Length: 219
Ligand code: E4P
Image (cartoon, rainbow, N blue to C red; front, side, top):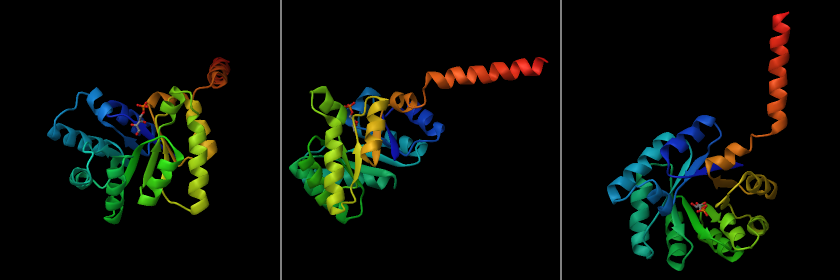
């Protein structure tokens, strides 16, 4: 299972990369804005900086919503670095753009997916990744994990190679449940990834080991 970090914050990306378990990065226009990254030149430079830090795929989202400009933007983004995955919203023009990018060998991430039908269309168009937003579904009292289960079933039925990238992950249980359901990738905040390692018995056990070791050394 691949772990992506969902942020445009360079320090957090570096921290996750240094942990040794990072497989990629996802960003979106809101995450870029949160870091104060505005203007074409700054956005481009920021993607380049992310690619320098992270080892795996880096999703960079197009802003255009019409086919022609999505293609223009996506081609510029893809040319920045082979790690770049062009992130395209699940809309009619987006499906056309994903089909186009796929025919040109450009990696894509179909974003803002909230239903199995949308995920099926993304796979048919040849998306490299599909991003179901499980946290945002949970937020409206709809089972986000059930969507992961449905997409896994559909993709396996037909052998679609589009990778399920569970997005909008909020906490460690989302990651564990996604792993049980066979999601290929999760993307979430560093806090959710780091929380996986915490267990009180680990802390108590380690404290005991170190205390016993120190006592024995005194003898
Ligand atoms: C996915 O790629 C999105 O950037 C992201 O996971 C959205 O998460 P949010 O619902 O926490 O904003």
